[in-house]
Length: 153
Length: 83
Image (cartoon, rainbow over all chains, first blue to last red; front, side, top):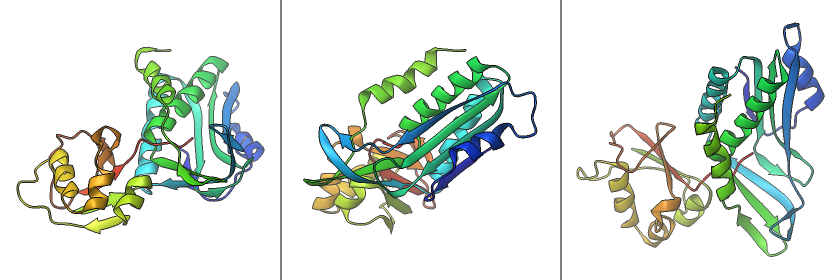
């Protein structure tokens, strides 16, 4: 169980190396790193602040990890999600899965991100030249999360 | 009952957290939202569209028919946008 919700940045290389350290049964590690973009909806974004619900965030991320482990044979799972004010190019999230084979690692990592996007209680507020605005949830994110209800590995 | 608000619900209501004792006829999460809307224009504005208000009780997602207890931690927030 590796869930971390933090303001600090993380070292992707060190985190991925640690995921399989000492476990030679691992055949592959798949990962996703989410970054702050400098544009949204055609407007320049100068910064982004991530608010979250301490306690529920960790609880929901742990539930998502547990669900992934019931669906795929995973040796290790890591989710790191940052909060606070971030700048374009900054890392927001790291999801990584280690497994004996690549299919399980890739699929589980994609699943983690799709469910995280619609279930983990985080909210983004963007800073633009016209002022601050809350980011709206996207319907395609719901659809991406829903497809895992029917699709089994 | 501890009520928490996040994101634009928090800014519209003007507080992130409050301790409230709803009247006895507030039995469910749906009842609570209806009652909160009567507490002022900020609440009415924030809770005008229930379709975009997510509810968690004791840090788990619930529907609008979920029963409430006096010691519950209830959170109201918009659809999440992390990742």
